[in-house]
Length: 146
Image (spheres, helix red, strand yellow):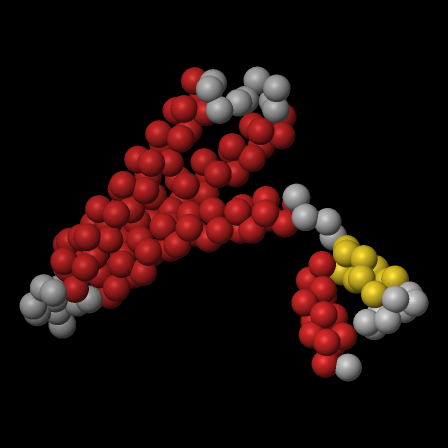
């Protein structure tokens, strides 16, 4: 039976610590923002410390990813912890990118109205209808094709 790679074990532990600490920090920021919304802004010392903590955890996760990839290339070693460390270390950057994308999508849509007013057909006497924004394009295509 092959021994586990020590670099793989280090990668797994670092990625696990970074992911758990990021989730705890993220939940803590949510509670802090809800409880002390007036005192918690972008220029407060606490916000800066929390931002630096997130950057530090992301750096720790990148180190875990590098160690995990390096341990995948070790000969005559069990690759279990190398694979787990690499997989876990990819989740934090993907989660950050996903949250940024979701936040941008929500902020873009919040400025747009939820419904639009359009005509049922091309004629000037056709009635006006309210169409949900996400169905507007479908309604336009159906109106043009008829």
